[in-house]
Amino acid sequence: MHRIFLINELLELIVHQVPDSQQDSVHTWELLSHERHDIESLSLTSRMFRELCLDVLWQTQYSLLPLFRSVGITVVVPNYKPMPVRKYDLTRSLAEADFPTILQYSRRIKSLSLRKRFHKLTTSALLLASESPVSVLFPQLRTLVGHHQLEPLFVLPRTGVALTNLKLPLMRHSPSVKYLGMVAALEARITSLDLSYHSGSQLELQLCDIICSTLAGIEGLRTLCLHLHIDARVWSVLSGLASLTTLSLNRLSGGFDAFPYGHTLIFPSLSNLTIRVASVIEFTLLLKCSNLPSLRSLDLTVLSKASRSDVLSLSNALVSSCNSALFTTLGIISTTNVNVNALGPVEEPSREDTIRSEALRPLLHFRQMRHLEFTTNWWWDLDDVLIHEMANAWPNLWTLRLDPLAGWSRPCRITLLSLLPLAQSCPNLDYFGVVLDSSPLPSCNSSVDCPPHFIRLCFGSSAVESPEEVAAYLARLFPRGVLEVMGNLDRKSAEGWRRVRQLIASLVAEQRSS
Image (cartoon, rainbow, N blue to C red; front, side, top):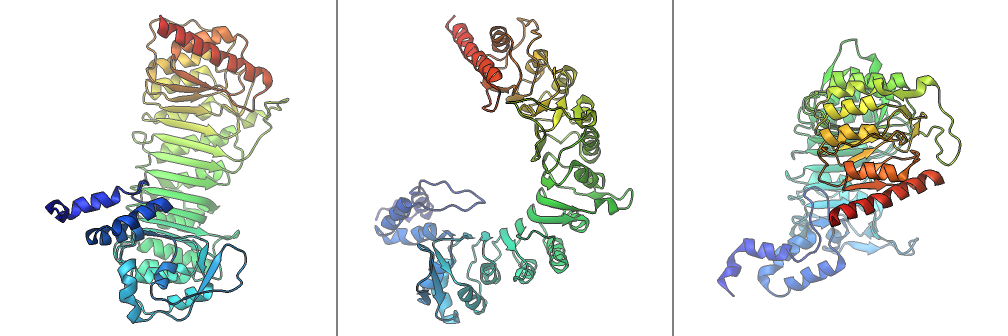
Protein backbone atom coordinates (compact mmCIF):
# COMPACT_ATOMS: atom_id res chain seq x y z
CA MET A 1 0.00 0.00 0.00
CA HIS A 2 1.31 3.40 -0.95
CA ARG A 3 2.13 5.78 1.90
CA ILE A 4 -0.28 8.37 0.50
CA PHE A 5 -3.22 6.19 1.56
CA LEU A 6 -2.16 6.54 5.18
CA ILE A 7 -3.64 10.07 5.05
CA ASN A 8 -7.17 9.63 6.36
CA GLU A 9 -8.37 12.96 4.96
CA LEU A 10 -7.48 11.82 1.45
CA LEU A 11 -9.44 8.60 1.88
CA GLU A 12 -12.46 10.57 3.11
CA LEU A 13 -12.25 12.83 0.06
CA ILE A 14 -12.17 9.80 -2.27
CA VAL A 15 -15.17 8.15 -0.62
CA HIS A 16 -17.29 11.32 -0.54
CA GLN A 17 -16.65 11.95 -4.24
CA VAL A 18 -18.22 8.62 -5.23
CA PRO A 19 -21.92 9.69 -4.83
CA ASP A 20 -23.31 12.06 -7.42
CA SER A 21 -25.70 13.67 -4.90
CA GLN A 22 -24.58 16.78 -3.10
CA GLN A 23 -25.12 16.86 0.65
CA ASP A 24 -26.91 19.81 2.22
CA SER A 25 -25.66 21.05 5.57
CA VAL A 26 -29.15 20.99 7.12
CA HIS A 27 -31.48 18.79 5.11
CA THR A 28 -31.25 15.06 4.65
CA TRP A 29 -30.15 13.44 1.43
CA GLU A 30 -30.48 9.92 0.14
CA LEU A 31 -28.11 7.78 -1.87
CA LEU A 32 -29.45 6.54 -5.17
CA SER A 33 -29.34 2.81 -5.82
CA HIS A 34 -26.34 3.00 -8.17
CA GLU A 35 -24.50 5.28 -5.72
CA ARG A 36 -25.08 2.82 -2.89
CA HIS A 37 -23.80 0.03 -5.11
CA ASP A 38 -20.65 2.03 -5.92
CA ILE A 39 -19.96 2.70 -2.23
CA GLU A 40 -20.48 -0.97 -1.36
CA SER A 41 -18.09 -1.99 -4.14
CA LEU A 42 -15.47 0.48 -2.94
CA SER A 43 -15.70 -0.88 0.62
CA LEU A 44 -14.80 -4.36 -0.69
CA THR A 45 -11.63 -3.23 -2.45
CA SER A 46 -9.58 -2.64 0.71
CA ARG A 47 -10.01 -2.68 4.48
CA MET A 48 -8.84 0.92 4.65
CA PHE A 49 -12.06 2.01 2.89
CA ARG A 50 -14.45 -0.13 4.95
CA GLU A 51 -15.16 2.21 7.89
CA LEU A 52 -15.35 5.33 5.72
CA CYS A 53 -17.79 3.63 3.34
CA LEU A 54 -19.96 2.52 6.25
CA ASP A 55 -20.06 6.14 7.44
CA VAL A 56 -21.43 7.27 4.06
CA LEU A 57 -23.94 4.41 3.81
CA TRP A 58 -25.34 5.03 7.29
CA GLN A 59 -25.11 8.80 7.70
CA THR A 60 -28.70 9.30 6.48
CA GLN A 61 -31.45 6.83 7.40
CA TYR A 62 -35.20 6.84 6.87
CA SER A 63 -36.23 4.02 9.19
CA LEU A 64 -35.28 2.37 12.46
CA LEU A 65 -35.80 -1.04 10.89
CA PRO A 66 -32.15 -1.60 9.76
CA LEU A 67 -30.95 -1.09 13.35
CA PHE A 68 -33.37 -3.69 14.74
CA ARG A 69 -32.49 -6.07 11.91
CA SER A 70 -28.83 -5.94 12.92
CA VAL A 71 -29.66 -7.80 16.15
CA GLY A 72 -32.20 -10.15 14.54
CA ILE A 73 -35.35 -9.21 16.44
CA THR A 74 -37.64 -8.30 13.51
CA VAL A 75 -40.38 -10.43 11.99
CA VAL A 76 -42.66 -9.70 9.02
CA VAL A 77 -46.34 -9.19 9.82
CA PRO A 78 -48.18 -11.76 7.62
CA ASN A 79 -51.00 -10.86 5.23
CA TYR A 80 -50.53 -7.11 5.66
CA LYS A 81 -52.38 -4.98 3.11
CA PRO A 82 -51.94 -2.86 1.07
CA MET A 83 -49.01 -4.13 -0.91
CA PRO A 84 -46.15 -3.46 -1.59
CA VAL A 85 -45.92 -2.00 1.95
CA ARG A 86 -44.42 -4.51 4.36
CA LYS A 87 -44.83 -4.16 8.11
CA TYR A 88 -42.50 -5.54 10.77
CA ASP A 89 -42.92 -6.43 14.40
CA LEU A 90 -40.33 -7.06 17.12
CA THR A 91 -39.96 -10.43 18.79
CA ARG A 92 -38.67 -8.81 21.99
CA SER A 93 -37.48 -5.51 23.41
CA LEU A 94 -33.87 -4.43 23.14
CA ALA A 95 -31.49 -5.66 25.79
CA GLU A 96 -28.28 -4.00 26.92
CA ALA A 97 -26.36 -6.82 25.23
CA ASP A 98 -27.75 -5.60 21.88
CA PHE A 99 -26.42 -2.07 22.23
CA PRO A 100 -22.78 -2.72 21.15
CA THR A 101 -23.99 -4.28 17.89
CA ILE A 102 -26.49 -1.52 17.18
CA LEU A 103 -23.98 1.15 18.13
CA GLN A 104 -21.62 -0.04 15.37
CA TYR A 105 -24.12 1.42 12.90
CA SER A 106 -26.22 3.95 14.82
CA ARG A 107 -23.16 5.98 15.84
CA ARG A 108 -22.64 6.81 12.16
CA ILE A 109 -26.14 8.26 11.62
CA LYS A 110 -26.21 12.06 11.27
CA SER A 111 -29.66 12.53 9.73
CA LEU A 112 -32.70 10.46 10.66
CA SER A 113 -35.86 11.22 8.68
CA LEU A 114 -38.48 8.75 9.88
CA ARG A 115 -40.93 9.18 7.06
CA LYS A 116 -43.33 6.52 5.82
CA ARG A 117 -41.59 4.01 3.61
CA PHE A 118 -42.40 0.64 2.07
CA HIS A 119 -41.01 -1.06 5.18
CA LYS A 120 -42.60 0.13 8.42
CA LEU A 121 -42.66 -0.89 12.06
CA THR A 122 -45.95 -1.59 13.77
CA THR A 123 -47.22 0.53 16.66
CA SER A 124 -46.67 -2.33 19.08
CA ALA A 125 -43.07 -2.67 17.86
CA LEU A 126 -42.40 1.03 18.47
CA LEU A 127 -43.96 0.85 21.94
CA LEU A 128 -41.83 -2.20 22.74
CA ALA A 129 -38.68 -0.46 21.48
CA SER A 130 -39.34 2.69 23.52
CA GLU A 131 -39.46 0.59 26.70
CA SER A 132 -35.88 -0.63 26.15
CA PRO A 133 -33.06 0.51 28.47
CA VAL A 134 -31.91 4.07 27.78
CA SER A 135 -28.41 4.45 26.38
CA VAL A 136 -26.85 6.88 23.90
CA LEU A 137 -27.19 5.16 20.51
CA PHE A 138 -27.03 8.25 18.26
CA PRO A 139 -24.02 10.28 19.42
CA GLN A 140 -23.57 12.03 16.02
CA LEU A 141 -27.23 12.58 15.17
CA ARG A 142 -27.75 16.18 14.04
CA THR A 143 -31.16 16.13 12.34
CA LEU A 144 -34.25 14.22 13.47
CA VAL A 145 -37.47 14.35 11.44
CA GLY A 146 -40.32 12.39 12.98
CA HIS A 147 -43.47 11.45 11.04
CA HIS A 148 -44.89 8.86 13.43
CA GLN A 149 -45.88 9.80 16.95
CA LEU A 150 -44.00 6.92 18.62
CA GLU A 151 -40.67 7.01 16.79
CA PRO A 152 -39.33 10.11 18.65
CA LEU A 153 -40.03 8.31 21.95
CA PHE A 154 -37.32 5.82 21.06
CA VAL A 155 -34.83 8.21 19.47
CA LEU A 156 -34.93 11.35 21.63
CA PRO A 157 -33.72 9.83 24.93
CA ARG A 158 -30.89 8.09 23.07
CA THR A 159 -29.36 11.10 21.28
CA GLY A 160 -26.12 12.84 22.15
CA VAL A 161 -25.12 16.48 22.30
CA ALA A 162 -24.73 16.83 18.50
CA LEU A 163 -28.50 17.12 17.84
CA THR A 164 -29.36 20.57 16.47
CA ASN A 165 -32.37 20.18 14.13
CA LEU A 166 -35.74 18.77 15.21
CA LYS A 167 -39.00 18.32 13.32
CA LEU A 168 -41.79 16.70 15.32
CA PRO A 169 -45.54 16.10 14.77
CA LEU A 170 -48.07 16.86 17.52
CA MET A 171 -51.51 15.28 17.78
CA ARG A 172 -54.26 15.00 20.31
CA HIS A 173 -54.46 11.82 22.41
CA SER A 174 -50.81 11.07 21.64
CA PRO A 175 -47.48 11.07 23.51
CA SER A 176 -46.83 14.63 22.30
CA VAL A 177 -46.70 16.01 25.84
CA LYS A 178 -44.24 13.30 26.84
CA TYR A 179 -41.69 13.88 24.12
CA LEU A 180 -41.99 17.65 24.32
CA GLY A 181 -40.78 17.15 27.87
CA MET A 182 -37.91 15.13 26.42
CA VAL A 183 -37.02 18.03 24.12
CA ALA A 184 -36.88 20.38 27.09
CA ALA A 185 -34.59 17.94 28.93
CA LEU A 186 -32.12 17.43 26.06
CA GLU A 187 -28.51 18.29 26.72
CA ALA A 188 -28.04 19.07 23.03
CA ARG A 189 -28.14 22.66 21.79
CA ILE A 190 -31.22 22.77 19.54
CA THR A 191 -30.91 25.54 16.96
CA SER A 192 -33.77 24.57 14.60
CA LEU A 193 -37.21 23.34 15.71
CA ASP A 194 -40.29 22.50 13.63
CA LEU A 195 -43.56 21.59 15.40
CA SER A 196 -46.80 20.74 13.58
CA TYR A 197 -50.18 20.14 15.19
CA HIS A 198 -52.39 18.00 12.93
CA SER A 199 -55.80 18.99 14.17
CA GLY A 200 -58.44 21.40 12.96
CA SER A 201 -59.08 22.82 16.40
CA GLN A 202 -56.92 25.09 18.46
CA LEU A 203 -54.28 23.77 20.80
CA GLU A 204 -55.45 22.00 23.91
CA LEU A 205 -54.65 23.98 27.03
CA GLN A 206 -52.24 21.40 28.44
CA LEU A 207 -50.36 21.06 25.14
CA CYS A 208 -50.13 24.83 24.77
CA ASP A 209 -48.64 25.09 28.27
CA ILE A 210 -46.04 22.44 27.45
CA ILE A 211 -45.12 24.14 24.16
CA CYS A 212 -44.64 27.48 25.92
CA SER A 213 -42.45 25.96 28.65
CA THR A 214 -40.46 23.95 26.09
CA LEU A 215 -39.75 26.98 23.89
CA ALA A 216 -38.82 29.11 26.89
CA GLY A 217 -36.31 26.48 27.99
CA ILE A 218 -34.42 26.17 24.67
CA GLU A 219 -31.43 28.50 24.66
CA GLY A 220 -29.77 29.31 21.37
CA LEU A 221 -32.81 28.51 19.19
CA ARG A 222 -32.31 30.27 15.84
CA THR A 223 -34.94 28.78 13.52
CA LEU A 224 -38.51 27.98 14.56
CA CYS A 225 -41.44 26.74 12.47
CA LEU A 226 -44.84 26.27 14.12
CA HIS A 227 -47.66 24.70 12.10
CA LEU A 228 -50.28 25.41 14.73
CA HIS A 229 -52.52 28.17 16.03
CA ILE A 230 -50.56 30.95 17.74
CA ASP A 231 -52.18 33.13 20.37
CA ALA A 232 -50.93 36.15 22.32
CA ARG A 233 -49.41 33.95 25.04
CA VAL A 234 -47.22 31.97 22.61
CA TRP A 235 -46.22 35.18 20.81
CA SER A 236 -45.10 36.62 24.13
CA VAL A 237 -42.96 33.53 24.81
CA LEU A 238 -41.38 33.82 21.35
CA SER A 239 -40.24 37.36 22.15
CA GLY A 240 -38.10 35.89 24.92
CA LEU A 241 -36.00 33.83 22.48
CA ALA A 242 -33.03 36.17 22.20
CA SER A 243 -31.24 34.15 19.48
CA LEU A 244 -34.25 33.59 17.22
CA THR A 245 -33.49 34.79 13.68
CA THR A 246 -35.98 32.89 11.48
CA LEU A 247 -39.64 32.35 12.39
CA SER A 248 -42.42 30.67 10.41
CA LEU A 249 -45.99 30.65 11.75
CA ASN A 250 -48.88 28.86 10.10
CA ARG A 251 -51.85 30.59 11.72
CA LEU A 252 -52.71 33.20 14.34
CA SER A 253 -55.52 32.67 16.82
CA GLY A 254 -56.08 36.32 17.67
CA GLY A 255 -56.17 37.96 21.07
CA PHE A 256 -53.42 40.45 20.27
CA ASP A 257 -55.69 43.39 20.96
CA ALA A 258 -55.73 42.22 24.60
CA PHE A 259 -52.21 43.55 25.20
CA PRO A 260 -52.21 46.71 27.33
CA TYR A 261 -51.88 49.95 25.36
CA GLY A 262 -48.22 50.76 24.88
CA HIS A 263 -47.12 47.21 25.73
CA THR A 264 -44.41 46.20 23.25
CA LEU A 265 -42.76 42.81 22.75
CA ILE A 266 -39.20 43.07 21.40
CA PHE A 267 -37.70 40.45 19.08
CA PRO A 268 -34.04 41.54 19.13
CA SER A 269 -32.57 39.11 16.57
CA LEU A 270 -35.51 38.15 14.34
CA SER A 271 -34.54 38.83 10.72
CA ASN A 272 -36.87 36.57 8.67
CA LEU A 273 -40.59 36.20 9.34
CA THR A 274 -43.01 33.99 7.39
CA ILE A 275 -46.59 34.11 8.64
CA ARG A 276 -50.10 33.08 7.57
CA VAL A 277 -53.00 35.13 8.90
CA ALA A 278 -56.75 35.33 8.47
CA SER A 279 -56.75 39.03 7.63
CA VAL A 280 -54.51 42.05 7.22
CA ILE A 281 -56.14 43.61 10.29
CA GLU A 282 -55.09 40.63 12.43
CA PHE A 283 -51.45 40.98 11.43
CA THR A 284 -51.56 44.75 11.89
CA LEU A 285 -52.66 44.24 15.52
CA LEU A 286 -49.71 41.89 15.97
CA LEU A 287 -47.28 44.50 14.62
CA LYS A 288 -48.67 47.23 16.85
CA CYS A 289 -47.63 45.29 19.96
CA SER A 290 -44.24 44.20 18.56
CA ASN A 291 -40.85 45.72 17.88
CA LEU A 292 -38.77 44.01 15.17
CA PRO A 293 -35.52 45.99 15.00
CA SER A 294 -33.58 43.35 13.04
CA LEU A 295 -36.28 42.26 10.59
CA ARG A 296 -35.08 42.10 6.98
CA SER A 297 -37.64 39.88 5.26
CA LEU A 298 -41.40 39.40 5.68
CA ASP A 299 -43.50 36.86 3.75
CA LEU A 300 -47.18 37.33 4.56
CA THR A 301 -50.04 35.08 3.42
CA VAL A 302 -53.54 36.53 3.91
CA LEU A 303 -56.71 34.44 3.72
CA SER A 304 -59.10 37.31 2.95
CA LYS A 305 -59.30 40.44 0.83
CA ALA A 306 -58.14 43.82 2.13
CA SER A 307 -59.43 47.34 1.76
CA ARG A 308 -57.45 50.51 1.15
CA SER A 309 -57.52 51.45 4.84
CA ASP A 310 -56.34 47.94 5.82
CA VAL A 311 -53.28 48.17 3.57
CA LEU A 312 -52.50 51.72 4.73
CA SER A 313 -52.66 50.61 8.39
CA LEU A 314 -50.40 47.65 7.59
CA SER A 315 -47.84 49.90 5.86
CA ASN A 316 -47.76 52.31 8.79
CA ALA A 317 -47.46 49.45 11.31
CA LEU A 318 -44.51 48.00 9.38
CA VAL A 319 -42.73 51.35 9.38
CA SER A 320 -43.31 51.72 13.14
CA SER A 321 -42.17 48.19 14.03
CA CYS A 322 -39.19 47.66 11.72
CA ASN A 323 -35.82 49.30 11.18
CA SER A 324 -35.96 51.26 7.92
CA ALA A 325 -32.20 50.83 7.43
CA LEU A 326 -32.39 46.99 7.48
CA PHE A 327 -35.74 45.96 6.01
CA THR A 328 -35.25 44.72 2.42
CA THR A 329 -37.97 42.21 1.44
CA LEU A 330 -41.77 42.26 1.57
CA GLY A 331 -43.94 39.63 -0.08
CA ILE A 332 -47.71 39.44 0.35
CA ILE A 333 -49.87 36.63 -1.03
CA SER A 334 -53.65 36.41 -0.76
CA THR A 335 -55.53 33.18 -1.37
CA THR A 336 -58.90 34.92 -1.80
CA ASN A 337 -60.08 35.78 -5.30
CA VAL A 338 -62.05 38.90 -6.17
CA ASN A 339 -64.12 39.33 -9.33
CA VAL A 340 -61.16 39.30 -11.67
CA ASN A 341 -61.65 37.48 -14.96
CA ALA A 342 -59.45 38.47 -17.85
CA LEU A 343 -61.59 36.39 -20.21
CA GLY A 344 -64.83 38.20 -19.49
CA PRO A 345 -66.36 41.37 -18.05
CA VAL A 346 -64.76 42.69 -14.90
CA GLU A 347 -66.82 43.98 -12.00
CA GLU A 348 -64.97 46.70 -10.12
CA PRO A 349 -65.24 46.75 -6.32
CA SER A 350 -66.30 49.66 -4.15
CA ARG A 351 -64.11 52.73 -3.80
CA GLU A 352 -63.04 51.66 -0.29
CA ASP A 353 -61.76 48.31 -1.56
CA THR A 354 -59.61 49.87 -4.29
CA ILE A 355 -56.00 50.20 -3.12
CA ARG A 356 -54.45 53.46 -4.26
CA SER A 357 -50.92 54.86 -4.12
CA GLU A 358 -51.22 56.46 -0.68
CA ALA A 359 -51.69 53.00 0.90
CA LEU A 360 -48.17 51.94 -0.19
CA ARG A 361 -46.41 55.29 0.14
CA PRO A 362 -45.29 54.71 3.80
CA LEU A 363 -43.15 51.81 2.53
CA LEU A 364 -40.85 54.37 0.90
CA HIS A 365 -39.25 54.80 4.34
CA PHE A 366 -37.50 51.45 3.80
CA ARG A 367 -34.52 52.82 1.87
CA GLN A 368 -32.85 49.40 1.47
CA MET A 369 -35.86 47.72 -0.15
CA ARG A 370 -34.82 45.09 -2.70
CA HIS A 371 -37.88 42.91 -3.18
CA LEU A 372 -41.52 44.06 -3.11
CA GLU A 373 -44.00 41.46 -4.35
CA PHE A 374 -47.80 41.48 -4.25
CA THR A 375 -49.65 38.38 -5.47
CA THR A 376 -52.98 39.09 -3.88
CA ASN A 377 -55.81 39.42 -6.44
CA TRP A 378 -56.77 42.63 -4.67
CA TRP A 379 -57.99 45.62 -6.67
CA TRP A 380 -55.43 48.31 -7.51
CA ASP A 381 -55.37 51.89 -8.73
CA LEU A 382 -51.74 53.03 -8.62
CA ASP A 383 -50.06 55.76 -10.68
CA ASP A 384 -46.80 56.81 -12.34
CA VAL A 385 -45.94 59.12 -9.46
CA LEU A 386 -45.69 56.19 -7.03
CA ILE A 387 -43.45 54.19 -9.40
CA HIS A 388 -41.21 57.24 -9.82
CA GLU A 389 -40.98 57.63 -6.02
CA MET A 390 -40.18 53.93 -5.61
CA ALA A 391 -37.40 54.15 -8.17
CA ASN A 392 -35.84 57.13 -6.43
CA ALA A 393 -36.25 55.72 -2.90
CA TRP A 394 -35.03 52.19 -3.70
CA PRO A 395 -31.90 52.31 -5.88
CA ASN A 396 -31.02 48.72 -4.86
CA LEU A 397 -34.37 47.34 -6.03
CA TRP A 398 -34.27 43.89 -7.63
CA THR A 399 -37.90 42.79 -7.77
CA LEU A 400 -41.03 44.93 -8.10
CA ARG A 401 -44.18 42.87 -8.60
CA LEU A 402 -47.40 44.83 -8.24
CA ASP A 403 -50.04 42.19 -8.95
CA PRO A 404 -49.84 42.04 -12.78
CA LEU A 405 -52.56 39.34 -12.79
CA ALA A 406 -54.99 41.10 -10.44
CA GLY A 407 -57.81 43.56 -11.02
CA TRP A 408 -56.94 47.14 -11.94
CA SER A 409 -59.11 50.21 -12.41
CA ARG A 410 -59.38 51.30 -16.05
CA PRO A 411 -57.91 53.31 -17.58
CA CYS A 412 -54.72 52.49 -15.68
CA ARG A 413 -52.88 55.44 -14.25
CA ILE A 414 -49.54 53.64 -14.62
CA THR A 415 -48.13 54.13 -18.11
CA LEU A 416 -44.99 53.27 -20.05
CA LEU A 417 -43.53 56.50 -18.69
CA SER A 418 -43.02 54.72 -15.33
CA LEU A 419 -40.36 52.47 -16.89
CA LEU A 420 -37.95 55.34 -17.48
CA PRO A 421 -37.12 56.13 -13.80
CA LEU A 422 -36.75 52.41 -13.11
CA ALA A 423 -34.22 52.08 -15.93
CA GLN A 424 -32.34 55.17 -14.75
CA SER A 425 -32.37 54.66 -10.97
CA CYS A 426 -32.49 50.87 -10.42
CA PRO A 427 -29.50 49.30 -12.18
CA ASN A 428 -30.03 45.91 -10.48
CA LEU A 429 -33.72 45.55 -11.35
CA ASP A 430 -34.38 41.92 -12.28
CA TYR A 431 -38.20 41.77 -12.46
CA PHE A 432 -40.99 44.30 -12.98
CA GLY A 433 -44.62 43.26 -13.11
CA VAL A 434 -47.62 45.58 -13.27
CA VAL A 435 -50.74 46.39 -15.30
CA LEU A 436 -50.30 49.61 -17.28
CA ASP A 437 -51.75 51.76 -20.03
CA SER A 438 -49.55 51.44 -23.12
CA SER A 439 -51.39 53.98 -25.28
CA PRO A 440 -49.54 57.21 -24.31
CA LEU A 441 -46.09 56.54 -25.77
CA PRO A 442 -43.39 58.81 -24.28
CA SER A 443 -40.27 59.81 -26.17
CA CYS A 444 -37.14 57.92 -25.20
CA ASN A 445 -34.00 59.94 -24.54
CA SER A 446 -31.06 58.45 -26.38
CA SER A 447 -28.78 59.22 -23.43
CA VAL A 448 -30.51 56.75 -21.10
CA ASP A 449 -28.11 54.12 -19.73
CA CYS A 450 -29.63 50.73 -20.43
CA PRO A 451 -29.42 48.00 -17.73
CA PRO A 452 -26.73 45.55 -18.91
CA HIS A 453 -28.38 42.43 -17.47
CA PHE A 454 -31.48 40.41 -18.27
CA ILE A 455 -34.73 41.76 -16.84
CA ARG A 456 -38.12 40.05 -16.83
CA LEU A 457 -41.15 42.19 -17.65
CA CYS A 458 -44.77 41.19 -17.05
CA PHE A 459 -47.64 43.50 -17.90
CA GLY A 460 -50.49 41.06 -17.28
CA SER A 461 -53.77 42.02 -18.96
CA SER A 462 -52.56 45.42 -20.15
CA ALA A 463 -54.00 46.39 -23.51
CA VAL A 464 -51.65 46.96 -26.48
CA GLU A 465 -52.83 49.37 -29.18
CA SER A 466 -49.56 49.79 -31.09
CA PRO A 467 -47.26 46.76 -30.72
CA GLU A 468 -44.57 48.24 -33.03
CA GLU A 469 -44.17 51.46 -31.04
CA VAL A 470 -44.34 49.66 -27.66
CA ALA A 471 -41.68 47.17 -28.80
CA ALA A 472 -39.36 49.96 -29.97
CA TYR A 473 -39.69 51.76 -26.63
CA LEU A 474 -39.09 48.62 -24.54
CA ALA A 475 -36.16 47.51 -26.69
CA ARG A 476 -34.52 50.90 -26.18
CA LEU A 477 -34.96 50.90 -22.40
CA PHE A 478 -34.34 47.19 -21.78
CA PRO A 479 -32.44 45.65 -24.70
CA ARG A 480 -31.99 42.44 -22.74
CA GLY A 481 -35.53 42.35 -21.39
CA VAL A 482 -37.56 39.14 -21.43
CA LEU A 483 -41.29 39.79 -21.82
CA GLU A 484 -43.51 37.25 -20.03
CA VAL A 485 -46.98 36.68 -21.52
CA MET A 486 -49.42 35.00 -19.14
CA GLY A 487 -51.67 32.22 -20.41
CA ASN A 488 -54.90 33.47 -18.79
CA LEU A 489 -55.17 36.72 -20.79
CA ASP A 490 -57.92 37.57 -23.21
CA ARG A 491 -57.09 36.78 -26.82
CA LYS A 492 -56.46 40.36 -27.94
CA SER A 493 -54.08 41.20 -25.09
CA ALA A 494 -52.21 37.91 -25.40
CA GLU A 495 -51.72 38.31 -29.17
CA GLY A 496 -50.63 41.92 -28.72
CA TRP A 497 -47.93 41.14 -26.17
CA ARG A 498 -46.70 38.11 -28.11
CA ARG A 499 -46.31 40.41 -31.10
CA VAL A 500 -44.40 42.88 -28.92
CA ARG A 501 -42.11 40.08 -27.75
CA GLN A 502 -41.34 39.01 -31.32
CA LEU A 503 -40.64 42.59 -32.41
CA ILE A 504 -38.28 43.17 -29.45
CA ALA A 505 -36.29 40.08 -30.40
CA SER A 506 -36.01 41.32 -34.00
CA LEU A 507 -34.98 44.83 -32.96
CA VAL A 508 -32.33 43.56 -30.54
CA ALA A 509 -30.94 41.22 -33.22
CA GLU A 510 -30.68 44.13 -35.66
CA GLN A 511 -28.89 46.28 -33.08
CA ARG A 512 -26.35 43.54 -32.40
CA SER A 513 -25.70 42.91 -36.10
CA SER A 514 -25.13 46.60 -36.75
